[in-house]
Length: 186
Image (cartoon, rainbow, N blue to C red; front, side, top):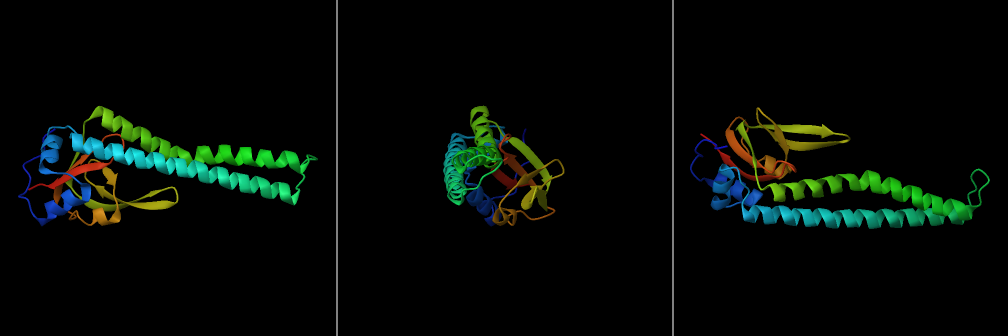
């Protein structure tokens, strides 16, 4: 899994290293197909942030369901002959289950993929001429970096670091598609 020899360290390479938080030692290990210990630690931190976001979503959904259930009880809505005292808990339960399945699923998937990346300890190499793309997923558009083989989602500020039409080696954690390092190739 070795990429061609990289172009000399330039301001561009320093910007890539800063944006994706990797060192020369990390890059050397990535060229051998391995995630460095420092990069594993970064993925672990990303996993913790993902867990905290998941907890915030769950708490927020429960509060929303509680307020919605209380409002339904206060309005004294009667559906199908059931008293409002029965409707309020049902609203809470339905909104909680719906919210947990719809809103927490992406966070759980991200957490699992980051965990698999840390455990596997390997990188996937995307190599080739880079193009800036925007991929539409459901209702959102996301900036991506695309090579001939594949694409990976990035932040818009990270996308601008790659010069379209130039060759790059992009080292990606295989399950989460998190870029761990990148270098420009000749």
